[in-house]
Length: 481
Image (cartoon, rainbow, N blue to C red; front, side, top):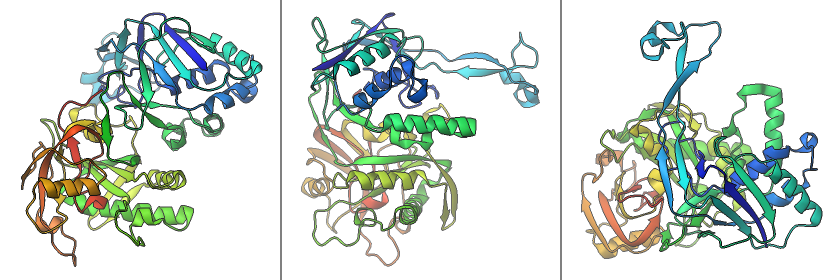
């Protein structure tokens, strides 16, 4: 047994796991604090390599190899969204300009503008203690001593206004709060360190020293590893299998009617770059060469703006989904290829592509469709944002829809309704020529709303056009946080 206890000295915690706080859209706050936050705090406490003062860094290599821990934390928390505030922007050499003078001018500071600061959401806890427990053998004495020295130097977790006190030991004292358990069918995701993270951080630091501010966090996707956890009292869920390895955003929105063209260009670009970077493209990406039925292949998804009053249906982002049968090496290489895309050009489209990050995205409801939560759920009720192409030429009933769900790796539904037009605001409404590919037999297509007995974790994609992103669904009932 090995455990680290964290006590929040102010009884509050503030963190921004995915950049949504910078957009003013973080709701609710992050809870419990991800294990990756604890790892980052330990790294910052005494640095790595020559920057170490009271340790030699070996304890970090031991720590990053630990499995996902059990997280004990009080589930009774209050989420307090903090108001956006404006601070003086100390820009040297230039004024704020005529265009921005009225909106951004600081009355007390002549010729200086204001910059918005969006602090996100503060979580207030009843029990200020969080305990991370690993069911592993305790570390050697020298490793344990080094971890304790690092823990003594940690001042805060998450934001700087969340001061903490850490204790490192083999067994936490006292009665523990409820536990968040690692579970592939869990209802939340938390960042977890993985082997090699210390090396990635060192490379990031070296690159920053050489190139300065041009080094961006999104250039090192290997640091981003999320693990599903089951929250206390969660009744369980069904997953669609597989995972999204890359979320991307478009420099400019594309009309929803071009979604088939866009996902086709996305697929071609990923396959081309994968081949140039890594050699032979695996069958799971291109979909050819399978000898039997029942296999799953990659899905190239377009993410339209749907589900809110201002929804336009324009495609704002892209996602690459790979089935669970794809091994870790293929997933990693495909992610590198997807993140390496810069433009998609062809068939009348020319649009820039960047890896999804918090900067540059408007903090309005129209940015919501870019974030994974808009497509992952979990939820019991889903509706197509992009029409689903039928698998056979027959009327759709509950048995036929159950067949679709089985093919997509989903449980059988308990109810549904079907319509020619979308059920959600902004849902993409397409003409036959925008769905049926030239030279292919034309199958019926429609929008559907589906109910499952248990909550289902997405992305949920139904029908025969799954690889091209047709049949992509959005959760309808309130997301379980």
